[in-house]
Picture 1: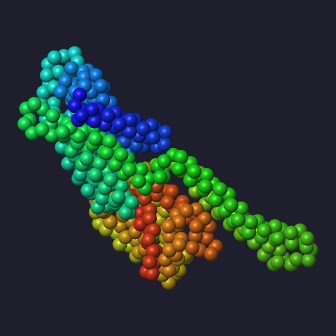
Picture 2: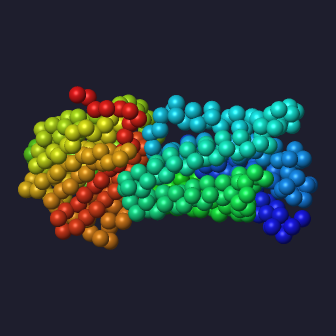
Picture 3: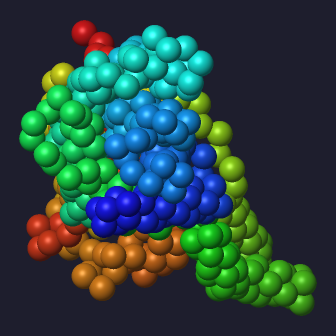
Length: 455
């Protein structure tokens, strides 16, 4: 065995072990969303290919005699589906609305390459097809198509990313795609009919590809880690316990004091004074009920019933409703035409919009104003709430969506926490910005696949 074959063998084993570790990580530490399921299959196809190649080199001692080993044909089972699985994963990660029939077409085109590999062990004609340059040419065509589509999807995702963290994550994935496709193509060019001798870099590329891809998947995505999510919930529970005790103490003390006075001096109190104490008790009970409603909205399971929603229409209806209330700032609507529909629950979105409008009133008062702007950017819908208040202090801005964080003296700090939860449940993201011109809350929702706004 040459030095190159020896190195290639141990690189193949290293790649198989790394992909195996990532498979274990995905199964034990992540949720069963499409992003992680497709990432799992990416690692699985790479693990099958590299482990079987290791067994080829272990038993046949050289890749030139790989056709004599059954491990070679099993390795192509993982290789054959890789282009379709890679594209599916990238579309899921970027939230790109690729039509199901196109994804299905990719799997259907890759399926003959995968099925023919084990069949080659029994049927000589299939074996000639697998060992010939036609199989390699078809695979290269599928790999190039997947590579081109992945570059297009990731390019749009980078341009439309809501934050620097998102841009960084998509760039990691883009680098991984380039590494994978280049490395795999060098292995496919190992043919006696091709005079150009290129060293096979597939196994080395797989080690780098999977590691860079994982860095992109998990970078800025701690919220998807199940253990981190459990720790976050425990921390929130501890904070909520302290917050509940603090918030309930004031109204309970008021109720206790008023009830004590009514009980101790029933005959000496005038009717007007008694009504004052009773009204105080009633107001404090109503305040307690409002607190419990807010807590329930933060922690209880919420059923989301998604449907086709026109964001512009929903905003207009919500603003019309809020203008009937005394606690509403001057609202300016700047709704872009042609904003597509999105899949969301209109009731929970309306609650988010109401919370943001109320926050705006608290921030800038009746003399201030709120501007609501919508626009369609690449594959997402962006909604911006901009007020003319004093903004959010820099020390609070990074924690503005955490429970019990508030810029108001008497605020409970739950409205924005609930709003963030509702936006996330609908598949969107919300961020906050602030400067001397006021505060801005920006919501991104993925646009619906082929859904157009009503005429």
